Image (cartoon, rainbow, N blue to C red; front, side, top):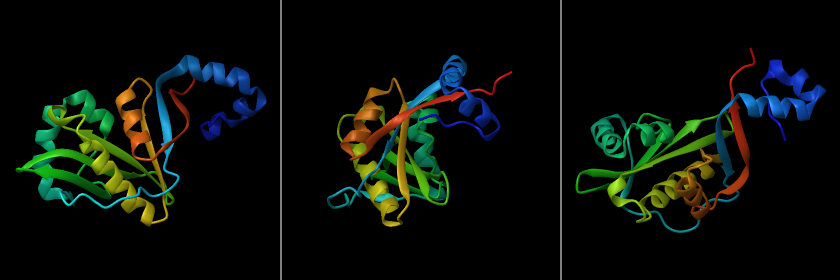
Length: 173
């Protein structure tokens, strides 16, 4: 399946193979796109709570600990339509937030403090926010960079199914 910008549709329909080759040559990012086929099972972790603007200092500390690259890839914010976090001892150890993709779909972002990775905190917040989003009858998606195997594994752990590979390409000259 090839998704194209509306103004590129005639090119994509006219010669799909050539269009795919052209997009691959222009690609500046490749992501894995996962969807949640069913709400996650299990009870919510009582340490997870909804975050808001007052939690911005906690998020800032987590982003500094995680670094600029991880923070940019995660694209989380306490002021997104919904954000949840696992807060222990006054520290935000993991956060997940939702970005509205459309009226029918949301995208999950997640960021975990490097000092507590591999302790299932990421899975805890992703499962929590995914469950909340699924209750609203919206399609829940999870994207991660192709080379980020840990993030792809987190998606699988939380019940997401790989749907496809998404190549992000700049507009042709």
